[in-house]
Length: 89
Image 1 (cartoon, one colour):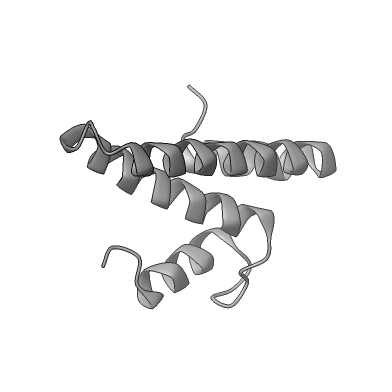
Image 2: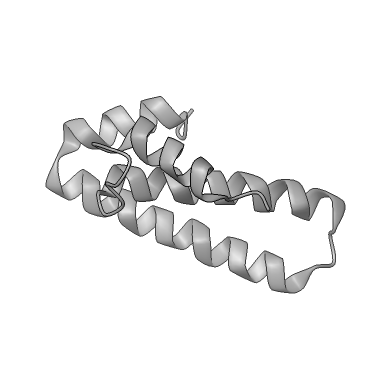
């Protein structure tokens, strides 16, 4: 399994305030990004997997909404997470 408890705790520790900080927008965006990267790799090999494609599109939408929320609340935190994850080029 690609998303174990250890991987989640590492993501939350790196991008959130602590290992148990699962609710902050930064940690949720980082988790979404990790899942999006995994599903993108899956879609490269399985082009006809429509269920995965649908869930990938939904996940990208969730991340976009969370980024918009963070941008409205605190622009500096938004810029920091975008730079750290390398989302905008």
